[in-house]
Length: 138
Image (cartoon, rainbow, N blue to C red; front, side, top):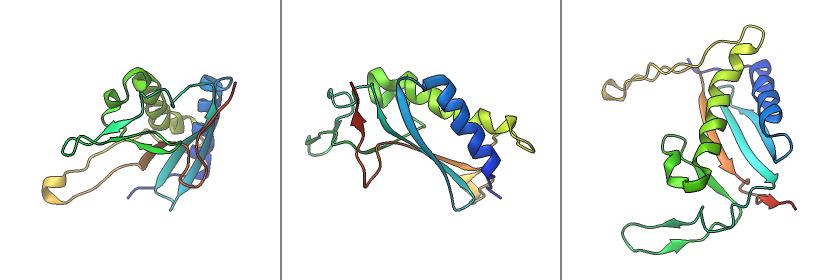
């Protein structure tokens, strides 16, 4: 059963601050005892430069980044020059909780073919929040 403790979330917060402390500010929170949500709320990285815009493959319409977007952590290559940033964030989310007291390594033994889901915990990454857009700092 998916579960993440408060101590494990604190380890993720601490590891993100150590790695990106001067350039990015994060909101790290536990949701429903089974998920960890990481939002990049402000920083020196310019996501408004067009690299986060998305194009609908059917209509061809381009959606401009307006300060909030959810990140597909399984395909970070969609985000061009920010690919490595998102890879690093997801790696920290999956490895840092093992440092907590009683922390365990992240695993995923799920099998969608038989409708069986077994993971340590779920991860979610976003730039900005739905109610507070990303803030570019100078």
